[in-house]
Length: 540
Figure 1 (cartoon, one colour):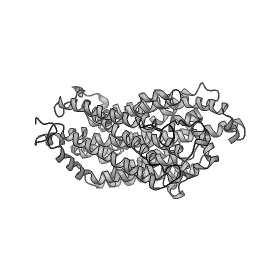
Figure 2: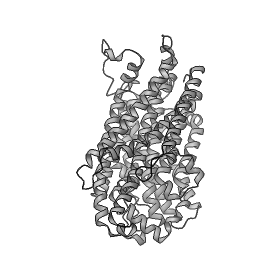
Figure 3: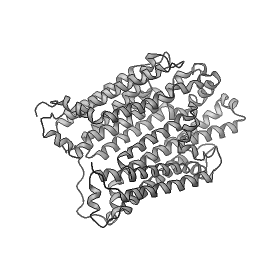
Figure 4: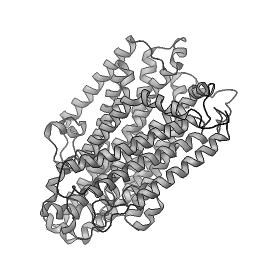
């Protein structure tokens, strides 16, 4: 087909018809995530509350690393708008980016792996038609989402968040990140040989840029202009005199540049051919590869090693924040006024920081476990398990292998992250012991195992709805990130498993809660296996 864009409109209509429900669900979910907290943050507009928040979120470099910076340099100016802009912009942009990466890879590289793209090419379809239709859908989606997000915040008529231009700046700077990272995924899909590698490389770049921005935000903010992820908050929505649409312009400019490169690469290759193809297989497998557990580990070893290494590096970065936090405590007079005595201030701030840090870290590691466990249903959809079941292989072995691989991997990832934190903060004056860090951090694995237990039940009962676990993970992140700040209803807090985990070292150990959650997790896993053993295999 000489016309590369031929029948793009037909494919665009097909995509919309196929994905309309998913897209509507996506829009409503993101509106609920990003806009629902606006009215709940009115408590922060109280001058006394704002002053405390200014001390904790603006002057504390550790919290700046987690939430992002703000140019506000006076607590009296740290009103509802700047508070919302600082706490919500980065997390919303990241959420948009993650969903876009998954969606683009599934609709481009994965469909090529499954032979769907080759089937399209057998008809009168241009070489770039499928890619262009996907880009049009993604761009239209983010533009609609940006407009609806801005209008939904404006409609709440909350003082400090009722400036339409600021609301549009917030909405477009976060939506632009979603489109940008979709284009990163599209580019990597042209380069690498399979969907899992494409996702891994895109998420790896996202994680790397996140770590880099944590370091630059507390040392030299101007360097952030060289980091595309930092553009999500360098527009500084709701901060009068500092609002800047340049970040939005740069985000879209880079996105279309990546699209152009993707077009060039796709035009120069055939379907199924990649610039970094898979390496040739060995003539004889290693002994460790024999048996189903060895097969699973061999297939997933690259991703597991990558996540384990990333967890350790992230731990090192987070560990460096403890030293910055100690300096903040010792040099800030306001901290001493908020707490009784400097030692009490140090213990309280460090303890609460550890709770926030370890809980967010465990959610990231839970995502690692979810990706590993959902491999079971993705292999099932590709009819690979059906071929294996022709051999003397029990469903119990398949189910337990994927489940134990996920559980053991998240335990090791959490340990390496905490070990990285321990190593990095050893040089501090008030360094925490290995036991203190491990006890406060490993307890969150109870919640991670519960999340994997819910997923195992979904995989057994309704595998086609297994991706709903990502909705629950997003809810956990939202509640952990902003739950206390928004003063949300108690019933909503009770839906989060993290609400029942002992928050060491701030709270005392609650062994009964921990045992109950673990027993409930085991029951969910057993129910999931019972359902998996009885149901038919799914395809497609």
